[in-house]
Image 1 (cartoon, rainbow, N blue to C red):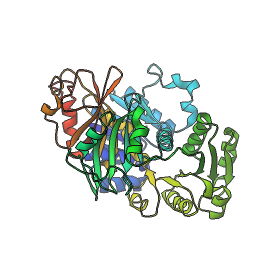
Image 2 (image 1 turned 90 degrees about the vertical axis):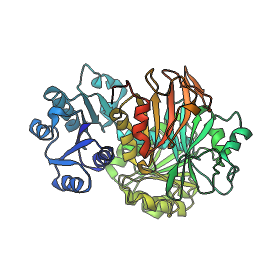
Image 3 (image 1 turned 45 degrees about the horizontal axis):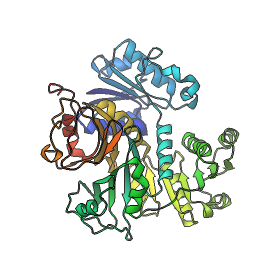
Image 4 (image 1 turned 120 degrees about the vertical axis):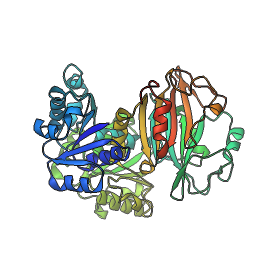
Length: 458
């Protein structure tokens, strides 16, 4: 596909990196020459300096024959105008805009982005998506990933196995025998820097990061089986009161009156603003790196510390301080992949990469076939995918053991008429089944083939 990306910041750069790696023809536009130069030097993309909403700049980027425009600059109005120009002048088929300001996304104004009112096909809000990801982690504290698929009927969880995990050193085939009614499948394992799809004879080891696809109703039971019975936190401390921190706090207030939330915010004006918008959350003005302030905020008694500022260094260091001072768990945002390896050695329990969340929301619009959901894991080494099987799929009408699935693919769940089916070798795929699977990076194109719209699509 020929794709134009407006914005070469962390979000745009992350999207460009992933799409270029999948052999798409990518052009990136930004007003900052240094960002354009950097992205052109490091990635196989074309870079253009200019405003992404200007017709002449879009023309120079090849908008006349582009398949998609993704506008993810820091300015909402530029993103929206870029999509309008792309539609009115160049008739680009798919137009995606990043919208950050919450007033645009308020339910009262939902008609703003209706098809009759705008040229934008897809609106993405990375801040809200990351906020939801944080809330899912809080709801399932034993998981370092918690991704919902098929209208939240299926969940994919990342779980770290500790020494006391009751099922380590047990062949996976025996798990089915020991727990025949368990609605879950271990679909992927990350061990010693390598991601692989396990077989029935493989054993799990302490220190493994596993990816489990399960019936959502059995999520808590599944976590318990793999040694995690942590309870959701009642005392939460948040470092950073920006869009993400504010969103998380407001949702926690709505969902559970028993949860006590405190926010440490460095900007005084912002601290005042969010204090007016939140009902029960306590706001403290100051730096999340001020250890005395963290103690005043009750970090010692906090069950979870969330580092949600827009600065990776502040997030990592403040999460480390929180753990040292007694916080039971610490989670931080890390936007730069170079910083991610620091998280575990510093004692931080888990992290969220906002770029991964944004890329997830975009990939399903890039992928061919009936791909409905995509979530990269382990830096893109694998993916969790939701797809719909059509009549033309080569998997239809045969047992899975005869379907000749690639070695790097594992089907974890099938949703058929609202029922969740955990597949066996005898399970047959039917048209319109919704399938949740795990795939290694080198099998992604094969997944698109398995769920193609027609034999001639490719």
